[in-house]
Image 1 (spheres, one colour):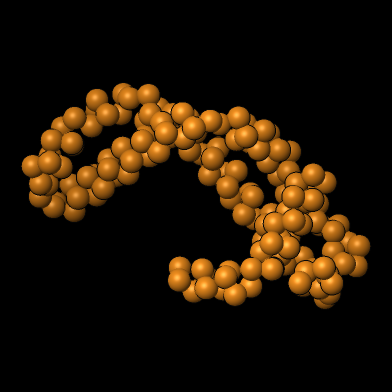
Image 2 (cartoon, helix red, strand yellow; image 1 turned 90 degrees about the vertical axis):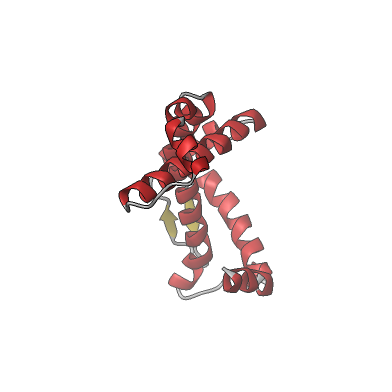
Length: 147
């Protein structure tokens, strides 16, 4: 993680350039290389639908989502401990015994109903960003406006 952060700081111009190219690609549905070749983005219609939905999410949604994610993470952690025959602390045992109630909360439902779409949106956006960064190199040329 530290190396990635250091690399991004050292080569900030590349990431700024890539972000600009990503915005253009999100409008057009493809990345154009320096040689003029068009690389169409996979699952672009799905991405645009997810992006429209994602852009409607407000801070109340994100508060619920993050709380629900914490519940899901704790549930997973406790189940792992139980599967490994680890003894639960008093606090963990109390949480485990009340997990059914936690899972009935609105925040947990928001998380469970949304997590796959949010994950898919983030993965596609990340994939598109990588294409925007790498496409010129794959075509054997770098844009002069990169630096």
